[in-house]
Structure formats: structure tokens, C-alpha cells
Image 1: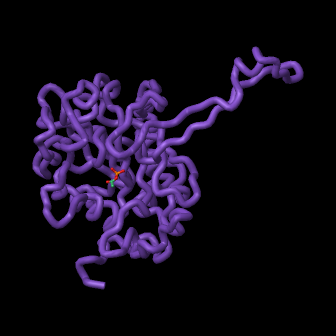
Image 2: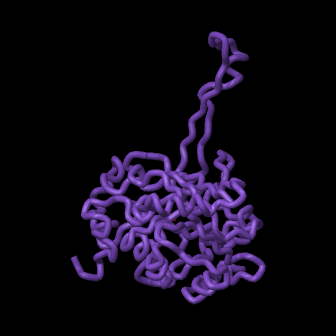
Length: 293
Ligand code: UVW
């Protein structure tokens, strides 16, 4: 393997690690997250799941159907002393608010920690499946680049490292090992308003990858479809930040988070709770990220 294909943090959490920077969320980081809650008010950052959509790009709408409902009872079905409803949902795991498993991305045939892309087969991911991630409670740091004075007022803008650092300084935020970084680009709002498309979206410039890892972040989440700016400014790589930050450094990505309510609170630090579904061998999972203000 060529030297440039080796990931920067490979081996850092063990030769057999499958959780990457999620390992930074130690009990200490979790206690710091719990301590960041002030009012106890709880917000969800999830886009609602509905068979009427939304659908983002190649990922279809959820299919939700009933396997037992009131109609069955009206038609004569009976249970002893009670009634119940049951349902089924089918959905693309990356088609709504979701977490990417570390098996989602590879380059040069290698994914996180050097595992071969051949370990992802039609049966799912043998290594770095989303079931390896587990629940996470930590501190969330929120940067709103789409606020009234923000730099991200259109999808032509890729947020530079200087702009990222300036926003930390302006809010007097200091990252600590195991924090989650949450970035509002305004893309989801503009998409809902019919202004944005999946052809172009505001996001972080890939030059931010190394610095984000050096700050000790475990996770990164954004209100766009890729965290990073798109389409990629590079001819040779369509998802350079996915490679630099997820594949090479093990930082966990969350996409399509809904920050609209959070943005109205003025809060930049809080307790952050997220858990993917334990889909064995899954390469991603829908999530319902929760903020405790
Ligand atoms: C890809 O970048 C391919 O997917 P996602 O946006 O889910 O990370």
C-alpha cells in the first residue's frame, strides 16, 4: 500500500478497533456532556420520518405501512380484552437524519483502521458496522454559520478553516477530547424553502479535516447531506473530507440534522445524546440526535 493511503489515526485505538474517534467519548467526556446541560430543556435534531418524504437525492422516501390497524378490528378481528396496532418501516439508512458507519467510506480499497473494502459484502459490513458504534452521550458544540451574521447564506460557500476557527473564537468555545461538533450551514432550511438542491450544498471545506481531529472531536454533524461542501472542489476525489476525517482519522459523521429550533436558543454548548440503531453489519443508521439544553 502506498504511504499516502495510510490513515493518520489507524491503530490509535488498537489494531482491531472498529469505533474510531468514538473512543474519545470516555466516561469523563460523558460527564462533561451531562454537566453542559443548564435548563434541562430537551430538543430533537431529527427530520421526521414519513412515507410522504422528504427524499434526498438517490435515497428514497421511507415506506411505512400497517400490519395491524383499526380497520382489522372493524372487519371483525378480535383480541382478548385489548386491541393493538403494528407497523413496518423500510428506509434507506442514509436517507434521513443519520450516522455513517466507519464502513461507509473507503479509498484505495481501505476503510478506517486499514480494513479492506472487501469486508463489506452483500451481507453487510464484517468490520466497522454501525452496530459497533453504540450509544453516545457527550458535550455538543454548535456553530451556526447560517445565522443573521453567518458566512453561509448561500450554497456557493464552502466554510474555510479560518472561518471555522473565527467562529470558535467569537463564541469563546474550546473543544475538549470527545466533544461533538455540530455545524449549521443553512442548507436544510434552504432546501425546505425550495432554494437548495442536492446538486450543490454549503459545507465545510476539506482543509478543516486535520484541525477538527486535532481538537479531539469524536463526532461531527451538519444540516446538509455530506458535512463537507459539495460538489467536491477536487477533480480526483468526490468526498475528500469523508476520506480525510472519517476514513483516515475515524471521526464519526452525522448528516441531515435539523438545527432550526436549536438555532433559536442562542446556545452553543449543551449535552448531546445520540445512538444509532444496532443494525448488525449496517453501513449507516437513522438517528434521533437529542440536545439537552
Ligand atoms: C456519501 O457521502 C456517499 O454518503 P453520506 O452523505 O451518507 O455520507
